[in-house]
Length: 131
Image 1 (cartoon, rainbow, N blue to C red):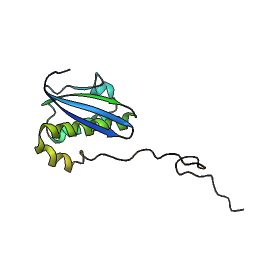
Image 2 (cartoon, rainbow, N blue to C red):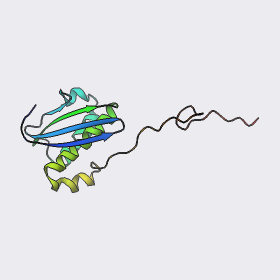
Image 3 (cartoon, rainbow, N blue to C red):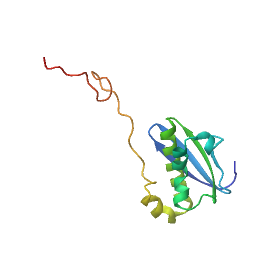
Image 4 (cartoon, rainbow, N blue to C red):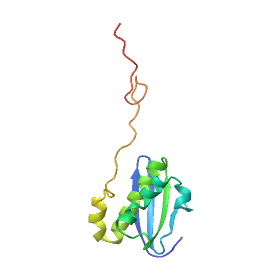
């Protein structure tokens, strides 16, 4: 990947954590040393990851390198998207309005709720019988 000066952003979603670095460059997008379309073959996940660059019209201005671990594809794509948005903010503060309006700077705090004792899942209880 590219070397030299970069802007970094950390993104989290569900159980996934992503460290994203933006380099001045061609628009190459690497996630865990693999191209974007190979790592996220589902287009909705890939589009979510690219959305901060599209909103700020910087698809060809930066080369992106991301390391992501934990969670599944939905959580990982959300984590990388938040990391890209935060790195863009570090690169240029003028992007804040557009990113905020698109909802790309807000950390989605929803995580899996823990299982409670006596229940089948977090909230599902055994069916109640009256008679």
